Image (cartoon, rainbow, N blue to C red; front, side):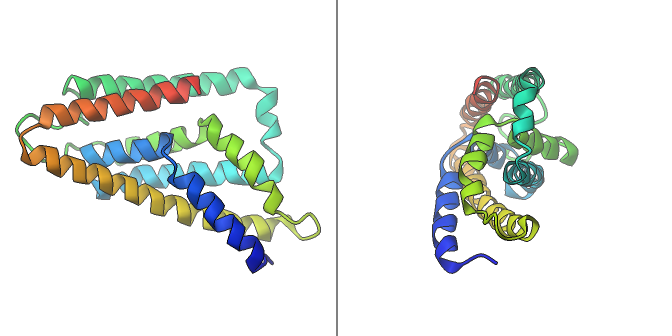
Length: 207
């Protein structure tokens, strides 16, 4: 269905796009710091669902519908960005369920549903994600062949690449947590995670 020559271009292209620091990767790193890699998997599940929906929409041409309702999309972005920024402020102040208690390294518990929703909203409301898929995915689709099987294969590969990159970023966040935690700099870790989270929120709202 898809030739090797086409895949030899597709795989490195989307791997580079996924690996580039962005909203979802930064969020994975922050949660890797504050929740650990295992619990961050719930955010990844939501993010991958969102990426899959955006990729299918872009490949099927549904993305043009987003242009008809820019106000609704903007509101969705602002609400999602404001919520993430609020979490960032809480982290900066070492408050809230995501903040690491002073002098402790026990992972604070955040509900799986909340983590899943964070990933889903961040992926779907990310305008750069839509732009990448609208620009990059259609050229790899052959109009002379059935669209469904092609999309299924390409989206599955995109999700595998995205998941690998999310794991890398979450593992990096866990490494920073261990490094700073062992040195007794939990407050600094909270502030670093808070700044990154506020940045993700602002990026999402204003991007």
